Length: 114
Length: 109
Image (cartoon, rainbow over all chains, first blue to last red; front, side, top):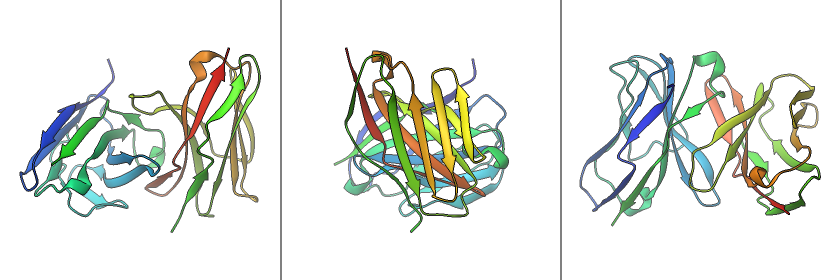
């Protein structure tokens, strides 16, 4: 089954404790991206990756890091989480750069930072 | 700031009627437009995309694009209770995609 898998789905952590949200896709997609969704603000892009070893900032990259060492994986790293990073996070992928809007989304990861 | 604007709703439509969802965008460089449906507590799901001016139909859904007016719409015919969801409009140019904040649609029996 074609899918984008995120883990963990739910996480409560404390300020400053580093965490990683993993994302993996099994569709051999080149393009992957991370979004956060907050009430009234919609989906905002954090980082995206056109291909292995190619990453770039989205609209709200502050406080986040990413890496793309393998085509299928695109983890999101919060080095020192803060309460304003409490949000619902989605990883998504698409076939390639010419189809960046035709996204397959993971199920989401709800993060609470205390 | 490049934006995609949507009325947040809720938009209430009787079952069997036509639901009309609208979206405007500010970036004239946007080439492609997308409609995603998001059920409460779920992830967004792509339901329609449109690249050219005019109408595109897929079953009960019709997407309309007017690049001169920077306007995108989604029509849902014969609305069903299962269409109750939040609909996200998005526009993309190059590698960037910008989402609107979504319109909440409620289909009343």
